[in-house]
Every structure is written in structure tokens, then in C-alpha cells.
Amino acid sequence: MESVLALATVLGPILLLAVLVWAWLRTRRASRSNEIQAERGARDLRQDIEDRPQKDVDL
Image (tube, rainbow, N blue to C red; front, side, top):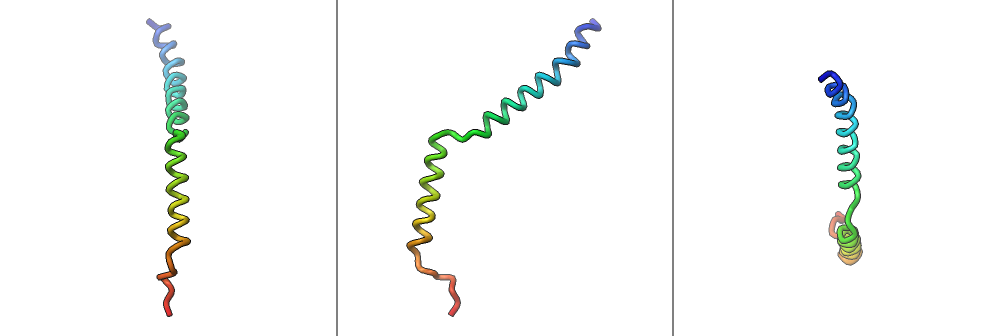
């Protein structure tokens, strides 16, 4: 019984750390479709800003 406790004490934190690193790496990467959509949105926003007249200028 003592060896099982020692094994769990050593392997438990290692397994937990491995799962945390895996989850962090998995959520960190954006999918290709998300990247394309973000680029399209940024391009549209830049175009809108460029096309609209300056309305916030006080005369």
C-alpha cells in the first residue's frame, strides 16, 4: 500500500502538469478559419475607417 501512495505522489503532479500544458497549447493555437475571419474583419475595419469622413473634428 505504501508503494501505491508513493507512486501516486510522484506521478499525480506530473500527470496534472502534462494535462495543463496540453490544454494550454491546444487553446493557444487559432484555427485557420479563425485566422482568415480575423484578417477579413481587420481589413474591412481598416477600409471603413479609411472611407468615412472625419466626423470627430471640432471646428
